[in-house]
Image (cartoon, rainbow, N blue to C red; front, top):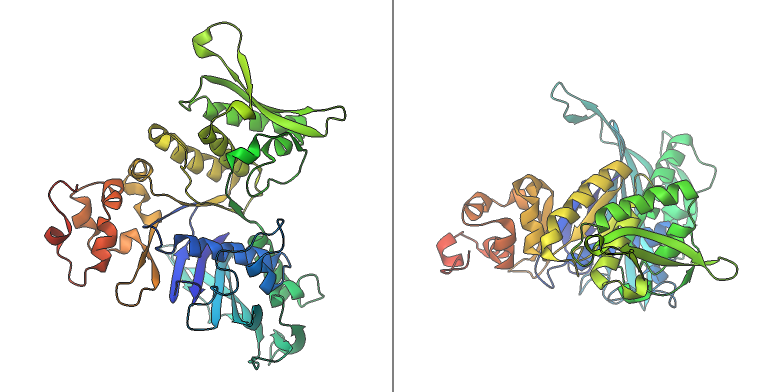
Amino acid sequence: MITELRLENWKSYEKSSLHIDPLTVLIGANASGKSNALDAFIFLHRIASGTMLTTALKGEDKALPAMRGGVDWAAQRPGSKFAVGAIFKADESTDYEYRIECRVSENRCDVTSEQLIRKKYRTNKDKERMPLSGGVHLFKTDSCQDMAPNVVARLYNGTKGAPKVLGRTHAVLFQLDGQKLRQEIQDGVTLAISRLKEIFYLDPVPSHMRDYLPLSDKLDSDARNIAGVIAALPKAQQGEIEHVLTQYASRLPERDIRRVYAETVGKFNSDAMLYCDEDWQGMGEPHTVDARGMSDGTLRFLAILTALLTRPKGSLLVVEEIDNGLHPSRASMLLEMLKTVGAEREVDVLVTTHNPALLDAMGTGMIPFITIAYRDRTTGHSVLKLLEDIKQLPQLLAQGTVGRLSSKGLIEGSLQQQSFDFEALIEPGNV
């Protein structure tokens, strides 16, 4: 599992970290840096999958859309270098720390340094992790000149490291994957590559989900092929997924849904369509509606649930504005679904939201898993901070729920106050 994302001079961030739990919620005002943090996950996924660093930022036709800001805005201005990294938990006693630093210049992006560290731990009597050593650099690059065509990676061999000359246009991590390496290096590279490749950014577009589309073994980022993915599954697995989809969809307010399913269509049964059967309080025969007649909220919900049900164990599902189009009265049900299905499938979920109803449905028990993005009042840099680490939080919560405080901007307001003055922040009737 990925347990932490690290950002250095990435877009609007100077230096910040995002901790990842089974369900992580990222909140914050518009332009606070939420999307910039999520973009780092997309970048890491692309470079681990073999995409050139420049292409990972610029995109390449419709199959690989450009990242927000492209190459020009990847590094925090006025600098030209940025670094992103992640921590992976292999087991109770082993972590891997990955970091890649890049330089952007003349509309291109190249590696300047990269490393992968293995850290071993033991647990004390309180089951707290205690590091055994400072860690082993499985590989670490030498310093290189900005215009150098290659980079030298030092592969762990118990001494100074075996040098390996590699290109700068792709991540060293990707270039090492599949090569004959010392076992401990191979283990670390394989784990890091697999975890980064299993990051899935989901942005459901209901209008794209209403067409007949081919059978597929992988859900697209916009969920356009949701019917094709479900219909292509083995019958037993398809039945299980359709049962869960029906179980949750029947609790949505839009329709009295009795069944959700996908079926192949056409002469060769190579395309599929998503359907639901409605039965308003048992009045007559169920009425069948295909995706063209379903609401945007229903389609988005089904896309999120399908992604959870089809992602591999150990993956990370990232969804921006998770509750977009969903009725506020179903916030608790959405939260229950994310927790329950995510835990059963062992898929971690990272979401952003502005919805007070969803934040209120989380209750105080979810506070340790909520991170707020905000802009530093002095520098303008984006900052990520765990909600539970805000010193003024108890005083704020005494005046209202997290959802109500967030909707009024009071959490961000408290972070911008050098000396916290609660009365100055809250106007009569604000909470």
